[in-house]
Length: 145
View (tube, rainbow, N blue to C red):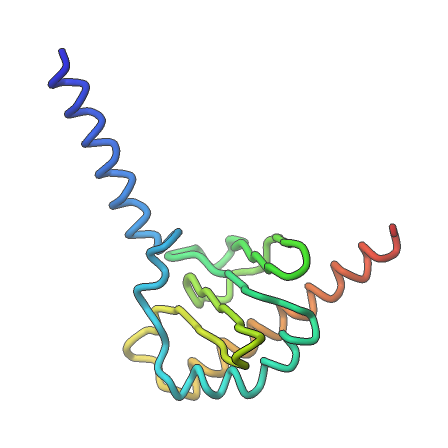
């Protein structure tokens, strides 16, 4: 009886870990940091906007999401905001802004066949959309204060 319970527990824990690994969720997103050139260019373009909104981190996208599916966005600033956006086909992306060091860390499994210009354009378009939507959410919230 005890061996069966232990086996079931180990199997469930293993399956959950494998599932999280395959979805790039939780701490597993840190496996894929982007090339320095892309990180530098995004930091140069977006750090003032993230600093002005006091955004500490952003997480968006979902692995293997269908084109018509909405994907989650989480923005961690003064308060954490989350909502759904149209699928941008980026897969999971995690952006961490360090305000003191003026640096950005980006974790994204960039497709191997995607050139720099295309990956930069995809990421910047998505970030602009998220920042615009974040501003709209904050504006609506301020009307209730």
